[in-house]
Image (cartoon, rainbow, N blue to C red):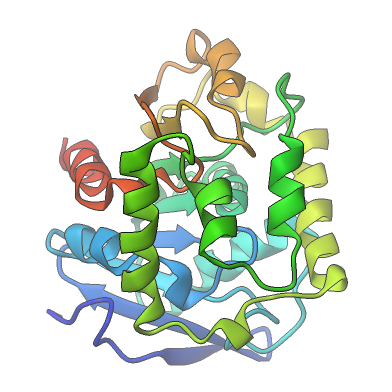
Amino acid sequence: MNSSFSNSENQSVSISGAKIAYRSFGQGSPILFYNRFRGILDTWDPLFMDSLSSEHTILLFDYPGIGDSEGEFSSDITEMAAVGIDLMEKLGYVQFSVAGWSYGGLVAQAALFLNKDKVQKTVLIGTNPPGINEVSFDPAFFERALKPQNDLDDETVIFFEPTSELSRAAAEASNERISKRLDRSKIPSTPDKFQHYFEGSAMMKKDENDFRGQYKTLKIPVLVISADHDISFAVENWFPLLRNAPSMQQIIINDSGHGLQHQHPERIAGYINLFLAH
């Protein structure tokens, strides 16, 4: 399999009676990606994905009821995690790595702790650990992210560092790459859908399964990649865990925001490739 993010075709499999849209491309060890709040197959940056797919087989999918997938989008984050795991099993993958960005990072952690026999490594980008976190969302996130449609200015504030000229230029370049394939009408835009995301995030904050505590004994390697100015999931929220999570390592990217892998697609892909290779 040598196709790229941009030229690979969308496919579907039936999971729990619903057709789940997915895309598979690249070559090498498999990585399952869980997407962000309002994310669909085509909101990933193509350069980031193609920089990973030179060494890995990439599996992307739309959550049930989101994008091109059928079914109901559940507020139970463990159910969303299970959809990805079921997809990998349907495609014949016994062991694989998982990755997640933002809300998808919360889902990826649920997938990790509930499937330790399947998950080999985990990559968490611009997200929070489970449980109570000290630094909450910046109001600027909600002012922009909950609009029915987001323009480039919104995306620069949400995902990049608007005070940095280099970051603003990276926002424009990433937006151009993404726009070549993206149908914005498929992006979730209604309050009822937003509420399911928020309820799933609240579930991880409550952390009834004590995922946070399980980091103390976790042996599966975890890479956390954070920005120095993430207005939704602050980097500082990871600091209390680092001394009590022996399999975790963290990278912090300066002058960056929530979408740091879209600002530095090749650089972040390089860090991930190195982590997964060793």
